[in-house]
Image 1 (cartoon, rainbow, N blue to C red):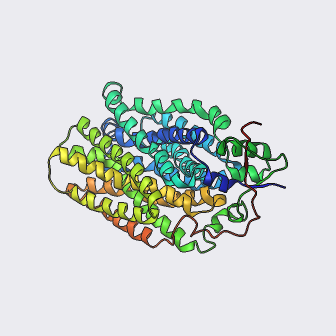
Image 2 (tube, rainbow, N blue to C red):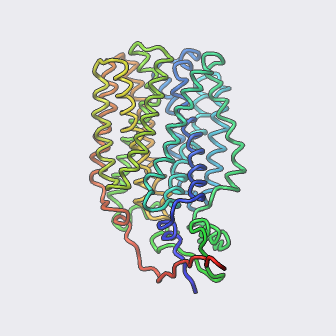
Length: 455
């Protein structure tokens, strides 16, 4: 009987149209997700003015979605290993589309915070599922690059929010950029039909027909017997309690360090995404100029994610990330110096590369660290615990702004978390793609045979 290792098939595959399809779907979902995250920071000055709230209240309003994201990442990330990734993604997209749009109809801070919390369940829940999907289906040689390209959708969503904010807020009010976020709910039926399902889920459900189709997509032109059995290595099979498995096989300390690194990285990301517009306005820049700095931050994030992913495939991804996090802290310190506006744009772009860009590569690292069966769970828990940093960031920076402390102190606080994240990453036990997840013995494989040219 022919036995086909689906993970090996995905590892050894060459990039083809199927991979492009997976990448584009994941990228599209994260662009929408990134828009829904960034839209609050873009609209925050206008919301504060219209609702008459102070900086502390505005910080709580910005953090409300982050509370939801923390629970969403943990619940949907873990649930996707049980119900399949198509349904997990569909639930997430429906939640963040409908309830972000609903925020545009609120009139007070409390109702705004409630609907943003519910939207956050979807926003946070989508990312670990999407990252696990991309890591699972990407060819091994370009896995970090493809994951970084996909996660750069977050930054593209931030750019889209800033561009639409400049066009819509002045003319139609801050509500317009929230209401526009409801359109992607129309994608849910297409996600259920067109997005590939997790290989481990298909194997657990014994859906051999779909597995055979996935195998054909991964190896175009290949063939396998009708009685072929599809499997993944023992460490990648769905068994036991997923959360407890994060601490088994020598992964315990590294799991905790991932949580610290994600806390630090997400603190930097959300401190900047929530308050950069306001901080630059406090520095004397107009709203239009302040939003341009947000665009520069997100362009830098895309460059950082792509370059970081490329470097991670060439070198050890852990040390690439250590360098990026540490450099992010240094660059945020440079923000405390007075300089030309053009130079400040370059510095902010570099900050974006080493904060948001680095965090996007960190998702790829986390996905590669854990075996397939607990990949969504591992990323979801790291992301969920890390959301505590994302929640703390707007609140803490809001307090500093409310106290009217020097602007430089905001950037020094944010930069300090970059150094903390670099230290945590440096102590994670990871020497290469397979070092953290020892594999059990698996049956001898019979590879797919290429289709004869004259058959």
